[in-house]
Length: 179
Image (cartoon, rainbow, N blue to C red; front, side, top):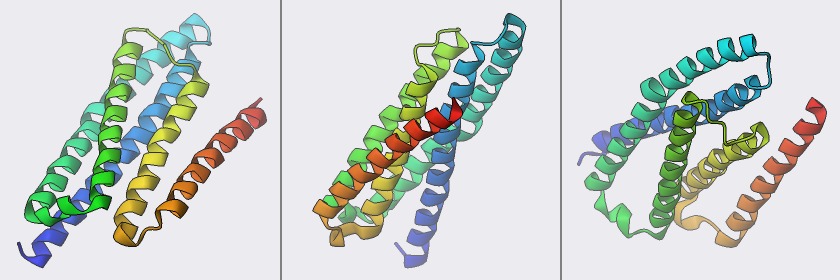
C-alpha cells in the first residue's frame, strides 16, 4: 500500500477515534445529569428525563456508535495494509486497551437502555468515576501509539497510575467544592 494511502487511513482512524471518545465522554456526563434529575420534583423530573433520553439516544446512535464502528473499520484496514504491526508488543497492548474500551462502550449502552426504562443503578458519583475510565484508556492508548517501542514501561506504568490517582483526587476535590 502506498505511503499516502496508509496515512489517509490513519488520519481517518484518528478522526473517528476522537469522535468516539467525545461521545463516550459526553454520554456519561448526560447520565450524571439524568441521574441527578431524579432528585427533582415530579414535573421537573419528567421533563428533564424526557429530554435526557432524547439527547442520549441521538448522541449514542448518531455520533458515538457510528464513530466506534468507523474507528474499528479504519483500524482494521490499517492492520490489513500493514500486518507487520500485529507482531509488535506495543500493538498487542494497545489492542488490549481497545478491547477494554469496547467493553466500556457496551456497559455505557446498558446504562443507556436502563435509564430509558427508568432504572438508575448508578449514583452520580459512581458515574463520575466511571467517566474517568475512558480518560485512562485514552491516555494509555495515545502514549502506547506515540511512544511505541521507545516507551519505558516502568515509568509508563507509574505515570499511568499517577494519572488515575490524580483523577480520583480531582473528583474528590470537585465533590467537596460542589457541596
